[in-house]
Image 1 (cartoon, rainbow, N blue to C red):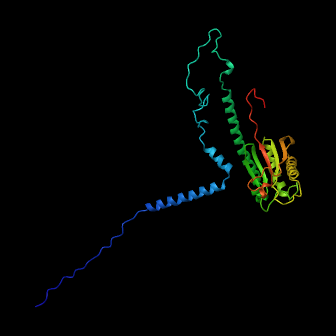
Image 2 (cartoon, one colour; image 1 turned 135 degrees about the vertical axis):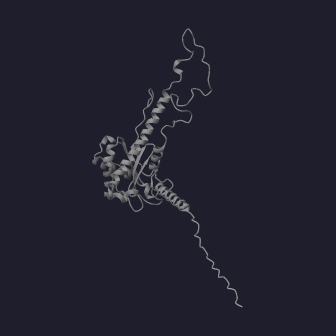
Length: 291
């Protein structure tokens, strides 16, 4: 008797593809990389800009509609009250004299507020003029690639008196030979490069020479007062020879070692310098006030 035939069973396994994960993570990663690149670029730009450039950028983006005071929105009284004690009733008017019983000269006037606003406006104008002068002076120096290596020896900074342009000695590079009042040739080139821009600016100029203090026990070959005064005069002569009229110079002085750039260390070379100051214009005084 024959055995029954066993059926052959064939199993087919269907391979299913993996589910699609999507590309959202790629977009998030690209945004992260872009943000990090922008952050490092911003940090690099901040480290490369000077202090006056940062101030200029801050003022450029400052809202122009803000009130200059923190007590009100401006106007005639600039947000200030006439009296701190509050509102008061007016005293009875004298019918015979037609006055309030007080001298009219003692009444508060608005001339002080007007003069303050005018002074503030002039101060803001001086600051803006200083920024323009800084840009012009730096552009004049950038147009001379032969003095690019002297960039660390030229310091331009605003002060309360005006704008200082200093020719500063650095370690290994001086602007004047030791003990001499006549500058090096590269110093003369810097001054001649600055002269056309200084001539276009309306500011009066003050030239001051400075030197480093002598170390204890050392002997100075040249008197520091004569040395700094002679260097300041030499700078004035170079600028005058480059086209600046004599009436543009308000003063030419030698300070010796009385005003070190680094008071904590008056012996270092950067204390030796000649500073050309573009003086701010004096604000007008209120009427009746004597200088």
